[in-house]
Image (cartoon, rainbow, N blue to C red; front, side, top):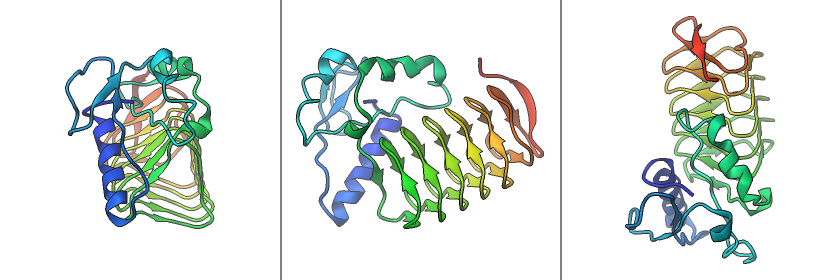
Amino acid sequence: MGGMGNGSVVASTVEDINMVNKEWEILGFLNDFETEPINSYPILGKITKEEVEKFISDPDVYFFYALISVKLNHKFLSKLLDLEIPDEKFATVIHPTAVVSKSARIGHGVCIQPFVSVGPNVVINNHIQIFGQSLIGHNAILKNYSYVANNACIGASLVLDEGAYLGTNCTTIENIRIGKWAVVGMGSVIIKSVEDYAKVVGNPGRVIGSTK
């Protein structure tokens, strides 16, 4: 579920997986606005419960929800929840170049993109995108709907709370918490915990607003 943004990135990750070992077949996209194919994949319908019900009973069909981003934050989460798709019906895709510790625990609806490094004892919950070349330090916890942009560096034992967003090239110290639906701007350096819904930028990070 998605389109030319994160949806196409997830599809590209799947294509790379299939070049190494054929694991998935992409049936197409559910999208509320597009009617023409996206990167040659057809539009199967809109993102509605009625369209989902056409596929959900097939044990070989899985979904991926790609509409979580810094713009489509907690205000749009109801769209996913309204679909009432069980967590186990969401695919998790890991790029062949990613390095994921065997002791890491990864949930449903996760996309780990090229050259990501996931350290030992990391916990990655559901519906999370981790973009290319990011590093996740040991024992970090990424909660549902959190988002890690490319080249982010996450310190050990950090907690990235529900829906928290880490921007491109940002860096965090270890043993802190980034609050739920908080946004850390690109290139920021975070040396202390961030409150829920805060917008933080700079080096060191400072609060400039709210995501509410």
